[in-house]
Image (cartoon, rainbow, N blue to C red; front, side):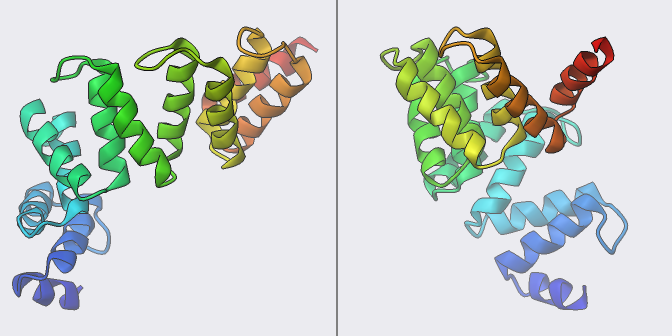
Length: 206
């Protein structure tokens, strides 16, 4: 703690960021959001992509400060321009949803692809779904399904759940109840409450 404090005072951006996280989450020290935001800002001013991303989240969520989507977008953009995967994903989400910026599926795809290349699993899932739906790209259910499978193999519960639903519905691939059950149970084991609710409801009917 003393090391981080001294390093942060000397202007080391990584120390400022780490100390901000400690204040943000109440790790070893009392939670103090004002100090966290101050340190995130100092670190971001020194081009720390993680600090820029965190400030984007803070201004987007509007929990600790008044919501400011313009500032959120600006911080995400700075972080994304440095190649930070989570910021790339969040920019993609803003364009996909039309949140603050004009809805633009092609730009969403562009950012999701960059985030997916760094292993961002939710970006991989979104790419798969957008290919399946033909949003921002020519509809290609085969390619979309391949993206979703890739995400499921990375053991992500959200992707596993979606893959289970896809097998259960039989709209994108041939309906396969056994595979649907397999992936929904896998998602439940990975702590997806939505998946566990389905598993429990099925077991209660038996």
